[in-house]
Image (cartoon, rainbow, N blue to C red):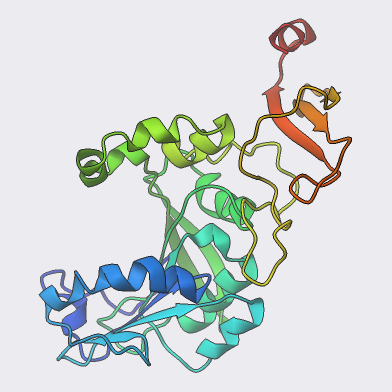
Length: 295
């Protein structure tokens, strides 16, 4: 996502050598930053001249004055912590874990440039799924599924009509050559996941949840939520005595969905009294004779 700037900067000069450059790197929660992102940054940023990491401020500073700041937005109200700040680049890591409100508030109010030779860019990386799946799919993927096309949008930004640019760059797990060399069995482990999860994480398939209606779908709860605030759980062997059933919602122009369910007749603390969906079939514009045979 790129907001307009006055002029382009010469590419032969690194942005971090500009004294007014500021970047904000975001994860939804601080533990996600602390366990993975910040330790990895300590292997990278010193090589580019950044000073020792400042733990209290959660930032790196370059001798030029440029700043790379780490932050998080666990709750929607946390976006207000960044009021009055100005960032040339905002990076959302696992963007679909953020709500549309969090993304748009920070993108359109905090990403800006007071210097004509600095950009105003929002960069997001994510897997399909989670609470923001539908929003990011509609905004970046749906207009051009194959990616590689610059999309233009006219929008009011701070009361001024401007043309915003956004770009979708698709990627699969196998595109990460470093990971494939270091852990060649990784793709095999992904292939053992349930089909929807495998398609999302291995192939970057944004339509693997094509039957999803609710925007609050998530694969794991946020830290302030109970453990049940999720729609996917670790797999387990279904006891033979649990009753099983299927339900079919037929459609042609819309989706045909078939779900397989198991009912727990003897609730325990480990397996509460719930109905567990353990398999799904979906298709669109398909004859009954075809999908009935498939099911």
